[in-house]
Amino acid sequence: MIRILLLIIFVFLIDWYSYQAFKTVFPEQSWIKIGFWIFSVFVYLFVAYGFLTFSRGNLGLNFGRMISLLVLSLIPKLIVLGFMFGEDILRFLTGIFYSVAGSQEGDFLPDRRKFVSQAALALSAIPFLGILHGVLVGKYRYRVINHTLEFDDLPAEFDGFTITQISDIHSGSFDNKKKLEYGIELINQQKSDIILFTGDLVNNQAEEMEPWIDTFKKLKAPMGKYSILGNHDYGDYVSWPSKEAKEANMQRLYEIQEELGFRLLRNESVKLQKLALSGVEGPATNGVEGDVASIDLIGVENWGKGFGQYGDLKKAAANLSDKSFKILMSHDPSHFDEQVKNFPQLIHLTLSGHTHGMQFGIEIPGFIKWSPASLRYPKWAGLYEELGRYLHVNRGFGFLAFPGRVGIWPEITVLKLRRKR
Figure 1 (cartoon, rainbow, N blue to C red):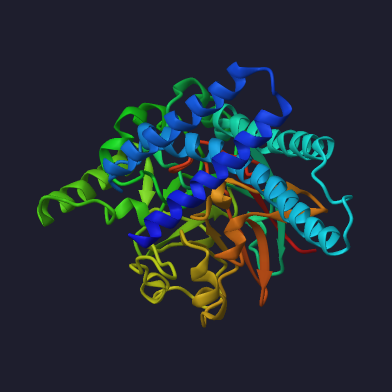
Figure 2: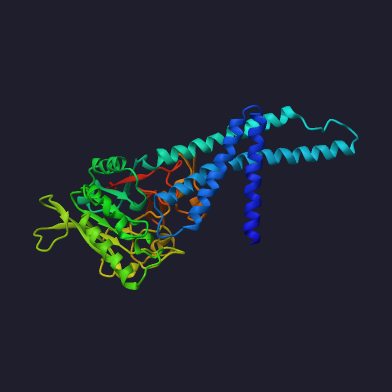
C-alpha cells in the first residue's frame, strides 16, 4: 500500500511540474493547458484498465498500445521534471544564501523560470518525437547487417558460405502485413545459402503465428531453413487450463515450424554438406556418393541465465567430431558465457537473440553503442569474440510489449564465412 501511495505521489509530481512548464511557456493559451490534462488523464485511465486486465498470455496489440502511451507520456515528462525540480532546488538554496546575507538578489526571477521551462520542453520534445517515430516507423525499419568472419579450419568448400540469421519474430505483435512482407522479401534478397532462426516465434501461444504462416513460408534458401525454440515458445508465461492444453499448444507450434519449412533442432545437430567434386549443395542425406565436406549445425533448446534451461549442449554435440567446424544456435546469449565458450569441443560460431537490444538505445558505429539491455546482458547485440570463439547476438526481427523500436532497429544479419589464406 505504501509503495502504491509513493508511486501516486511521484506521478503527481511528474505531471504537476510538467504542467508548470506548460503554464509558464504558454500563459495565454488555455487550450494547451487543458489539452495537457486531458491527455494525461486519458493515459492513466487507459493504463489502469490495462493493468487490471493484464495477462502475460496476452501481450498483443492492446497491451502494446498501453505501453506505448505510457512511455510516450512519462519519458518526456521526466526530462521536464529534472529541469524544473532542479531549478526549484537552486532557487531555494540561493534564496537561503541571500536571506542570510541580508540581500534581496535571490528573489525569484520570472525570466529565468521561463527560460528553464522553454529549455525543458524543447529537450523533452526529442524523446517524444523519437518514441513516436519508433512506434509508427521504427518497429518495421528493417536493416541488413553484414559480417565477414575468417577461420583457419573452415572447410575450403565452405569458403564464402553465407548465413542469414533472424531472431525473435514474436508474431503475436505484428499489425501490418504489407510492411512484414517487405521484411520477408528483404531476407530473400540476401540470397544466402542458409537461413537460421534463433527462437521466439510467438509471444506465448502457437495460434499467434496462424495469420502469418503463408507470409513466412515465402522464405527461401538453397541449403535449407533451420530453427530453435526461444523462452517465449514454451508457453511458460500463460496460465493453461491443463497440462494437456499446454502440450497441445507445443505440438501445434512444432507443426507450424514444419509448415513454415523450418527444420526445428531440439538439442540435436545436423551436417551441412557440399560435394567436393560436383559442387552440388544440400542438407545431409543418406546415400550421398563421392567425397563430401561438411560443417556441423547444432541447435539447443532455450538455455538462459534466469530463464528456462531446457537446452542440453552435451547431448546435442555428443556424436560430433572434435575436429569438425561447428555452428551453434542458442537463443539466449547468456548461454555463451555460462557454458559455450568453455565447452570442451570448439564451437566456432554461436548465434543468439533474445535481448531485442531492449528495442531502445543509441548506436553510432565507431562512436557509441548503448542500450538498457547492457545492464542485464554484457553481450547484448552484435558480434563478440572470446577465447577464439565468436558470438553474434541478433537484435530481433519483431517486437514485444512496447510496439516500437527507438534507435535499435529490427535486424536481418548476413554472416559470410571465409577460410583464412
